[in-house]
Image (cartoon, rainbow, N blue to C red; front, side, top):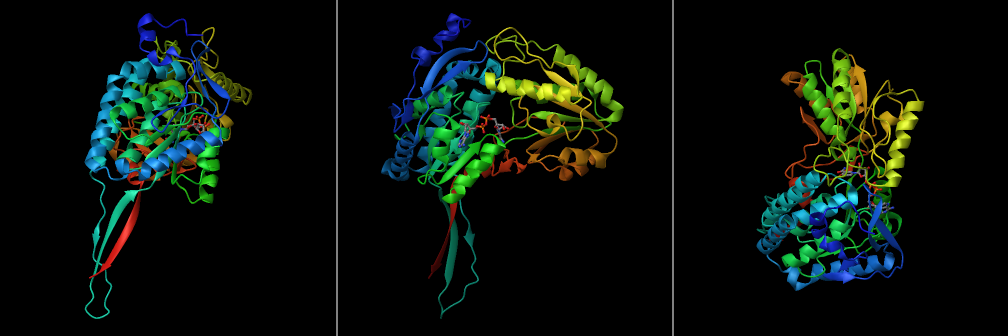
Length: 501
Ligand code: NAD
């Protein structure tokens, strides 16, 4: 069945969906799965099935890893000059932009996100990131070192380090920014000279499969980039524990990240883990009420709150508590909820029925535990997985709604009285991905930044990710980084050379 509410113009952009069934992409071409099991891709706005992809098994993963390993050692890739890798990545970025209408429509269809956000973040941001990483291909360097080694006789020593590609990379990504996060991993990996097997989320495989075609069209050798679809416990687990991979780069929940970490240690596979968050937003007494309310709304309702760095805990100085909560609730209550294809929509559906039920259960449990629902707290519209933007107060630091990642349009607001108290509250979390501070008191802000245990701290803004700024978590939010120089270097291994002359 096709989604019935798409316009002719929108459907015509989805030529990729002229067939319902899609194969994996291995060794430069579509590759039918060895498994007969499939997963369905469902439009969360209409609950209609839009595509079917393989639920791949270990044999499919073997094929993909073998393809990536062959490509890694093939003269076409292994001997390719860095400037040529840069050129191919640049060409890929152009193709992503040229196919931006189609890619953003696919992204909205499979994840429910607003089309404008898909265009701006996944497509334009993704293409910019690919260009940024293209530039790094020619700039990876080691150091010349002055050793203190002596003799025998008049022997002297020369030493230097060099960076080499780490090898075959398994990239396992979630459904909230399917194309963008796939690019965050594959672009630096290819810039560094690695090859990649990507496993997209079972909910959102379509842009990954389309990306594989564009990678081929850009001129990369076959096997350099492969896509294996399937569920986490089947395809994902087989890939993460495969002895043929040299690095696993994972973005997803902390629970799965830990399982992947355990599997990786068995083979000493290198890893980057970008995991969950429960990011605090700290409002100091001098902050501007309207600016904070707008910032909190963007911080939590952007992408339906399905953002690892979402501002899900709002700590407001008691002097501003009532006006900020009221202003935020007014913004939330006035948001237009609807399909991501409707340009007027400000909030789309969450990704799946399962996730919709999970978010609603969190809200219900909080209500039963004594939380006050200031606004929202219920489903919106008739069908589809829509949830009203929700603001909760009268919550306590030990409630699940304050401690656990909800990953939906749900924010808890708590008052505080002094700075030591808010530092303790903000840091009282197993997570440490991001935080924001809202104030124009420079001295207070600078004193606060080092006290916050989070990989990213924003000031008077939230959720602003930049391709040059490394993104990584403290504590159980993971380790290693996506984005920036730190990311591309994480796909290399450092070799030390010492020569007696
Ligand atoms: P998830 O952990 O359920 O799944 C992520 C990916 O892992 C999917 O492709 C899934 O199929 C796969 N997977 C699941 N079980 C697996 C297993 N046992 N072995 C190998 N792979 C397995 O997460 P999700 O629900 O898709 O995404 C939401 C989560 O992602 C949230 O926790 C969010 O905070 C996190 N996230 C983090 C960042 C970051 O940069 N830190 C960015 C985006 C999302």
